Length: 252
Ligand code: ADE
Image (cartoon, rainbow, N blue to C red; front, top):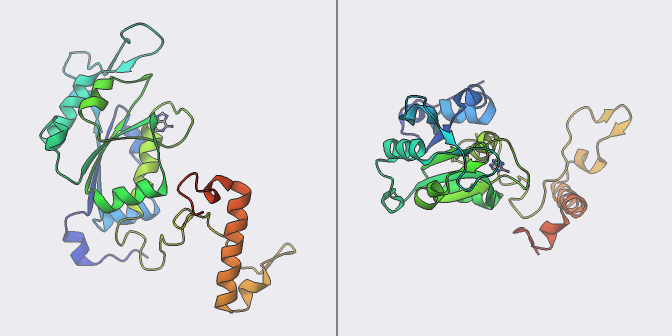
């Protein structure tokens, strides 16, 4: 059941997220589920999606063009993105952005997204503008003049920044105060203590002959905590040994 306090429904959102894209329909349903939907309904976050094409002023509403110097593919033009930022933030001078405003370019050339970056955005930003690149890229003057953070969601190339904007939005919104509700917390998430999360089980205790570990059934909380820590360590060792060596901000 969805219970939202009246005071929350009237308050200004904790965070505003604006997404600039040439495929606004991509986002029609994606924020209508689970924690993000609940956060929107509780006015914890407000998400607006803007069609970059509407900021193109030529008669063909062009948002891309051929690259200077030749080469394959098309490059997103700077003018519509500058016009969108001008309208949203009242300036295209990065030094004039309010302190808690961040303009993020989603691109494979960005800094890899980590839990630490998501935490920092959730804690320090109240206005995120996410630019979804397409084609071969975005005219670099957008990065030079407007962007405060260039972020990648991993070492692989997507056909556009839209899925990355969804990933970043999800990772940040669930960390906003009250977004997870009282029954859950981000404290035990993977990465929050430098380790992956431990395994979890629910009923039935015996499923097709596969038993839930005995220790979880005996109610001894000290033993359960110890088991969870050991299993988290084991899983991290197996799947992400780099975290244990402190290579990715993990514990040493
Ligand atoms: N756009 C294309 N590939 C991307 C990636 N890996 N991360 C963020 N944005 C992207």
